Image 1 (cartoon, rainbow, N blue to C red):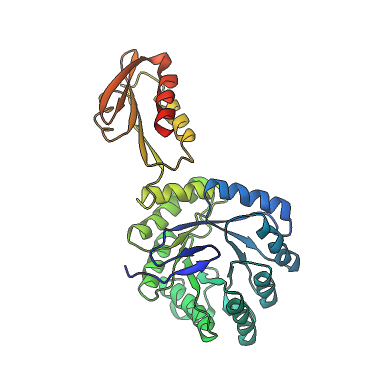
Image 2 (image 1 turned 180 degrees about the vertical axis):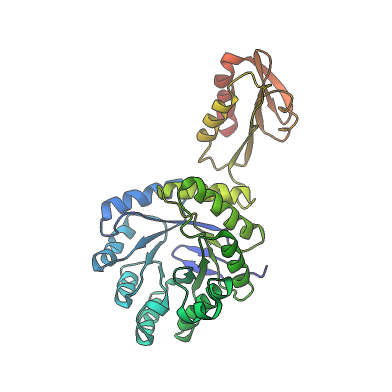
Amino acid sequence: MAMTKRVKIGSLAVGGGESVKIQSMTTIKTSDVENNVAQILRLQEAGCDIVRVSVLDEADALAIKEIKKRISIPLVADIHFSASLAVKSIESGADKIRINPGNIGGEDKVALVAAAIKANGVAVRVGSNTGSIEPEYFRKYGRSERALVESALSNVSLLEKHGVHDIVISVKASDVPLTVRSYTLLSRNTDYPLHLGVTEAGTAEMGIVKSAVGIGSLLLNGIGDTIRVSLTDDPVKEIYAAKNLLRACGLDKNYAEVVSCPTCGRCSWNSMALAEKVNAYVRNVKKPVKIAVMGCVVNGPGEAREADLGIAGGKGECVVFKKGEVFKKVKMQDAEEEFFRELKELLS
């Protein structure tokens, strides 16, 4: 795929060959500064790169200034239907705004927002989803990728007309195949960075699957510069899901990968419980290592030959191995303690 433009968002950049950035959005009214800051700090700790807040009124817009003082990641203000709130959010220190120029209130209002964007050097995300396709494109093409893309690009052209070019675009749908078709078409028609997501993906169980299929298939085809895994849940879960997605796509190699087998009737110990504990232990490790927890020696050192450290169950004992070579046998009751001793040494 063609290289996208590089757009600065606060201290970070998206597009232009930069790493794919992870985003999320707070679930608390923005004027509630204390609770918003607390939630954003949790998101930062989990690995969020960019956070978005909703701006419904002047109190929300003004709160951005105080929130910005207490966080270390770029902040995006999400505004609809109000040019004045967009301007106030920019003046309060938002690093980027999310608007649809088509619903901001006419040409003069777009010009007002564009002037503030340029004066303050902020970026803007525009786009469409299946609930906000411009009427003329919906009439022409119905609920389709062409309607989503042309609607998004028409909003982009409104900003370009007023000299704004630090733009990120999105075209989301809750329908995964439509999302994939839309971003694929959009990528052929623009070089602006693309923000990927499956909108209204649902609760964690299905939302993670839909996002993995939609976002993952696009990333594997070289499409996408920033992502959000939208879940009806604690937004921190969005960050871990997004990190796992990037890792599964091979776009983040600086982590501790845990491989484990599904087990079968040959497994004579509780490898599932150990795999869960190991996964939780290394969740935030930033070191390119591979760890294996295997049910039995049939699939142990062999299938996990590339693991820096692994364990597999046997008859009354477990074997601990490194790079496919067994170097220690331990009693089954001591397996967890011995393995964690080796794991801590590996990660030190």
